[in-house]
Length: 210
Image 1 (cartoon, rainbow, N blue to C red):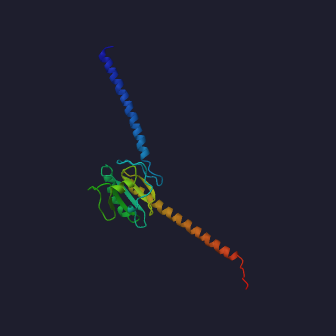
Image 2 (cartoon, one colour):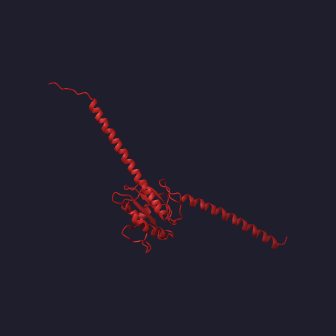
Image 3 (spheres, one colour):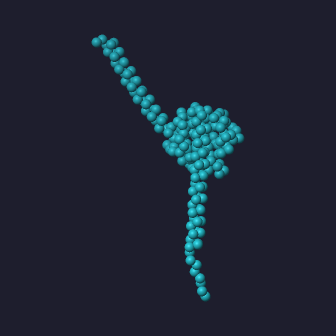
């Protein structure tokens, strides 16, 4: 076997091994992406392509400065370096009118950017500390919380059309949960009142003689 033929065979073997290594790496990246995009328990959000900063834990509580006046809050967390964030912010601007009737709408950014929408029904908050406090492991991220700040749902919204559907579903969940808790409280209160009435009617009177 000539040296040239041997070198050619070795080159093809190296190329094949490199191809197998790249295929394995791509498979691992797809698995990692699917894991990151699962979101948090609550309202299932459609999986969407998002890029940006990654943090350790999904959000469980929205910081107090982002909360509304006794109403839910819809927070879109965007990164100025994120490719999909500007498209998500534009979609939020389109949906803000409907969402603002049910919740405070917040666009949370890490730094100023001329691409962020400025309009009356969106509160633009540019604060790196609050940005880091909302620990969503993706951007753009939609975080919906009730009036107390407890997160009902969070997830990536990089894919067009996901934001409105996800926000509406989360707000509906908050309303249904609140109504259920109110009904349970009224039922418990009614049972307590009935119990008091029963006890009062069955308790024998004691006459005190001088």
